[in-house]
Length: 90
Image 1: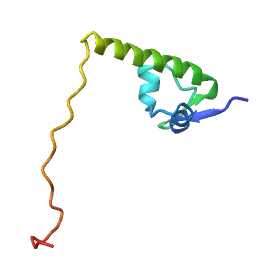
Image 2: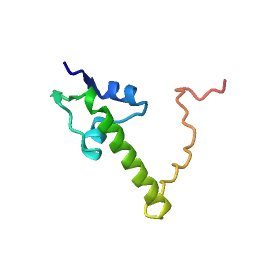
Image 3: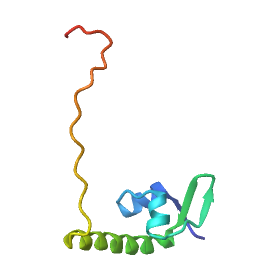
């Protein structure tokens, strides 16, 4: 009998955070079952997920090395926000 894994279980098994959308749309590994918004993959799909993730990240690395993809700059630091309702100093 096959063992179904939700997205959290796939993440735990692989040791890397993936979204269901990434697994399905980017890696092209379709879930074997869906209940409402929850998607499930078969444990037997883990090697395919790992192989496709490795190919994806390798291609991203190649593109970065060739200058085709640039890393996004970190957001500028934001000013501190005062959540205190009164303006008294502590």
